[in-house]
Image (cartoon, rainbow, N blue to C red; front, side, top):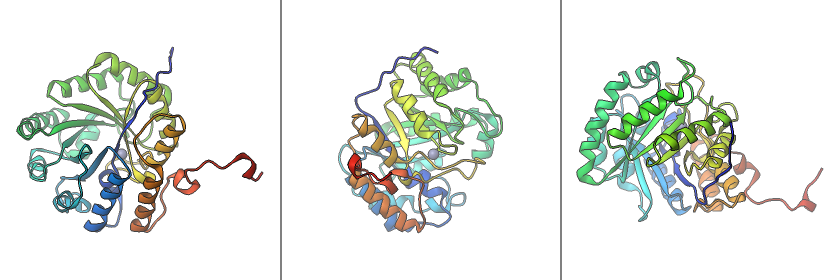
Length: 311
Ligand code: ZN
């Protein structure tokens, strides 16, 4: 493939640790700590935060306090606070908490969609149409994540034309933004560049976000391949926490600290203060009571002067 590097000047990060991250934890984090985490992320300048999930508490007890968390956070004007909704029932609960945005999700493969949400892709899309109708009078935007977009743990390779076709169907429903998820961490940088370029060509008016998991250490290389292809929206998680209980072999999300550090060093603006982000990350580690995969959290954000390095 021929590839002309064309990075954006600014990158928008949607922080997903309060939802994607905490839902994968064995322990249930206290409501007050979730609120404190979101507030620290806001203070660090994170422009978009996925605060909670309105999945049934029966399925996901970690997110049972979604209403309380949404009610407790300090909202900064301009920051987009989003929530995940699995179906119209979840959307009804979510809308009562006045989110700026609701996120829906569908798998690129039928098998994964059945395992994840117990319905076909067509049934999921039908629910999204209802959610779009419900959200409109509230002025709430809808973003859709296509999970397993780069490969499925059950079906293997997911053909790109299939992903583009599914993206087109979501676009027709009135979805405002699409995110492609590498749920089990099997994407490679060349594939990412090809997918981003094909997507921009097929749907130039549709904002595209990317969501990488670092199961095999390829998340940051994949993000850079996407950045070099002109992508400017990413979903990352503080500390690199996360994973999916319904995706065998899924590792943590790409760490927000590592992403922000790397982009800042490349002089690509994220609007995020790395020192405050690292403070939030230390709070997260203390709250969870275990270490997290982030590299920059451990190494620190400041470059070491050359003459201070030891061999
Ligand atoms: Zn994720």
